[in-house]
Length: 287
Length: 339
Image (cartoon, rainbow over all chains, first blue to last red):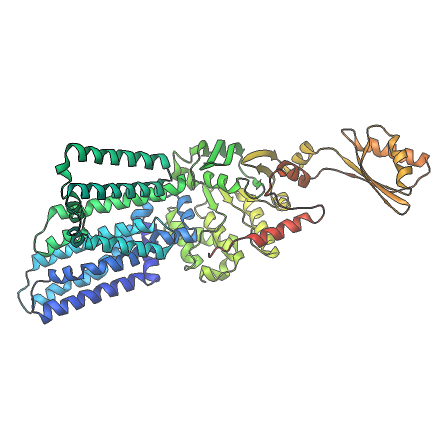
């Protein structure tokens, strides 16, 4: 795993993606700090991170797009399969390398609150709590990006898909206000989502029976709930959209609350997407 | 060393490898021969753990490739059909990565890289970008990668495809040299290549093993009917009459050119020299000079074609100069590894 980690770090810094990623992140944090902390003289550094969070939706996919897609395109994935390393080691090595690339600019950002503290009253615990959460949210988004990269051998597609998914996630809370809160509306929307999930299952496993089976189970379950306990569905979809938003969770930290459920949410998301990535790699062996 | 048992692989509905079983012993160069699409790459991918099998098992020195992949993979060095190279790196960086991933560290890593670089002759390009190297050198870097970790078996999938004739000769020489210290398995759809480099041959067609053995043994065992080519100084009618006096011979083909006629005769199962002796006597008695007579034995090429001819994807070869043609074909159809 260390060999993969080192190799990926080298590749990221060599291909300039790491530098661009760091530069963009520092640039936007800098603009945020200028506007909030210097111009508006607000002493809360966490607001700056809240302001910058949307930037991650753009630059994380650009960082993660090549991770696995490029291996597929160059056929170097065959090398990885034939080496005495497991798919878990490959994915973890790649993921940790990306985390390091993400952590380096954040370490620089860690100095900002200290610098500001020299000129005024900065409440450091909330600032660093928000920074830790910012790192966790980024880590979860990177895991999502790595997974998307494992679905295709086209880097551009991986990036585009990544940005789309993350922006959708970013706006899901404001979008949820426009989503029907009625029972039927939620039921129909959930049915559509269930179908989409099954299509994804089919794409990933190439197993039609499994996809149909999942579709039948999900739709039956949904109909059952709709029939027996329709009140459960009322407002369910907007609620799910809010609960699954990576960014909404982060704003709790920005508001000065160190939310442990948020930490658990991010860690779960990381494990979930890395697990899917490993499955996606293994699938190539079993197609 | 390697035993492949009842290997079967389906891609969806398509059967790529069908109930394939064979043993690979230690210390030989094995040629994996078959037309394109015969299942060579699929078999090699399964043997190296890059692909799962639908059924069957592969064990490397007692380690099952699916049950104990790490132990099994340590014994194998593999070069896939498209050399898996990171275009942006130098061979030095690339080999360092592969060596580390194979668990080599420190001094051992250095010495193994040195000996792989030396064995494959990539010293002059070791610090150039791989993407800028010629195909021949890229192929060598791929082979160097397979040599790291001192594997006992080296598996090369069509290592000469897409190379120019000089590079092909160099790679063949390299394979022969590697064969002195390792068990080497390499696949090819070019018979002459397998014949010159290997001392064991496995012929695959339609995902099945159709023949295996040493080249000479294969020729001997599978040699079909012998043919006699005879040119006599007489018209075809007259000559045919003489030929028909000899029992066990029948004409496959006859041609007349001026006063000279040429026959292609089948000797059946009989000893061809008995036939030629009888022919000589008969023509002498009729006072017709034999201008030319030759016994044509079935070559490995014929066997290969016969065994695989039902395949529509078979290499288009004709009599005479066929290997050159096949090689040219191979050079032309190769895809660019950069795309």
